[in-house]
Length: 471
Image (cartoon, rainbow, N blue to C red):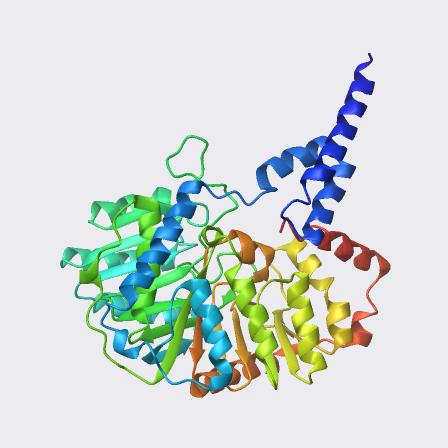
């Protein structure tokens, strides 16, 4: 038999087998994407599918996540914050609170003070001052820790803290912080700082993971009393040349900091196997404000898409207005349906995106959704000054969601992320002022303007959209 015939038969065998296998436990949209790729290029498609096709999480990590969740639920009632665990909230928010608690294991805690930090360098300066004032421990967890001026400034502050007896632990994602782990981490370790790579990549490495499963969180906990989280990494704003980032970080004091601490310690446990029973890291909680906050972590270890489920539920909760800010918007069908439902109920939906892009394929896929969004009545604002990397969502005057999650399949299904629900009209008002500022510096996209793009651009955007499951 001729080799060309054998190859042709093998291609059809791949197509037929994958036609049966791919749709199992997968959405129809994702199945179509993969099957189109495999039908066009059977052997390359099979190879790529073998690497990226299934969100495989080692059984060990799933068991660790279950153990961590059980520990969080058991210890939460014993922590010093227990007296803040049943704050008074409007009855209409009960379903949101219940869902968020079941998704992420954390209850809403009252008595917090929340600050929103939108000045990139100002947030780094504030963090360094807080590290300088640390007395017992400093914990950092970041997807990107840069081997640059910003990374060295924070490292210098940590080294000085370690020299005066402060226990410093730093978790860096093995891919996002690859250079810092190779170049900066040795100096930090030599000064007594524990530096650990998260989700190391390699065929034969202990606790290795697929390189597309990443820890995308950004967390700081100082002395168990002060925390940071949000969208900003420890890196210069210009780390992608031509696209200086603009971010939003949350500085938090009060009882909810114990939840940030628990998430950090859980990730530390996943990487090192160290025990979670660090009760000395949970000092007696005291009220520092009147904001109610609730952490909602997400990641493949949960075996469900926590971030997606929460955001979709929030969209169905809205009765007046929704404002979404995200750098990447490649939503799934349930998310789009929730937006359509909100609009049909008379809810104003505003979507603030960056006019600039640092990922071409993702931007093309994102723009393929503008037609239906504009047609449904969504107001799309394209932010011009910088690359707007902030990720937040506000619902009516009731609550905000701030964190690290992008609105795309990668953040929903592949990355470990963290979001914070804040139930406080004052914080909502503060965030809305920032959103209005961003809108004032944005271009309002119109249907007429968008319809003028060429047939070629439309085609390229449509093709990019087909790769939504790969982005």
